[in-house]
Length: 257
Ligand code: NAD
Image (cartoon, rainbow, N blue to C red):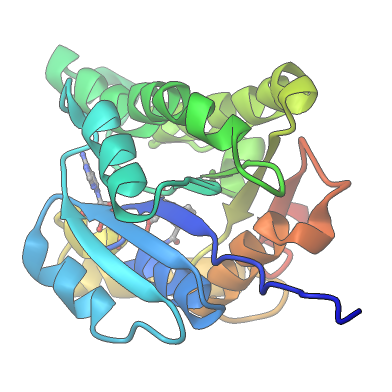
């Protein structure tokens, strides 16, 4: 008798902050492997640009501000409406509002916490029922930062949000293991993305920061978004089935130096 084998169905992946930088590279890397990607961001135009290179899979732009109250539910519903499943959630959207302690305002604190911490928590919570149903087990990958593991004078609140995200990563790995969901994080070092421009820095400031970063990175250069995307896709791969709670530095050795 001939055995009938069916090809595994493509996975569905949600990537937040997918209009630029690491999120765009990650959406494209998953799509290159044949996944359906819901590319989430605030503005449609950059998301459409991300989707212009879909690879073997498909990238669907989805405009949503992750800090809005109804965003978690809208995002999960959109993923399920598109493909009926959700396999991987990448909590990538993040902002830097670098200020020294004396300059913080309630508004700048709230904005940074809402984007970098509250949004990933609520989106993960909304995604849990669908992730539990993922045929090969659901995966959550959070995007942290490398330097925050030491100290970050002048940018302590950003570093604190990312350090908290790493603690959530380890805690959720234990909480969600019985539900067949793995949780991991990447901790990028200096990566060539528009994050500095999004923070409002000018060309001179950006150049000075880049020089400092290269001098403090043992591999002696800035990383590429694709190098972080590779790490995210690898942590989410079915072959990483025994990896959970891991925070993987992708930083050219910066955290060691
Ligand atoms: P980026 O600014 O290009 O990407 C962040 C994306 O998130 C942007 O597209 C932005 O529009 C989106 N975003 C911000 N707030 C949002 C919101 N409320 N709703 C929806 N989308 C929102 O910079 P990036 O470097 O690609 O950053 C991606 C992640 O990597 C961030 O979490 C950042 O903290 C982290 N990171 C970056 C570096 C680096 O050197 N570039 C280093 C360490 C960690």
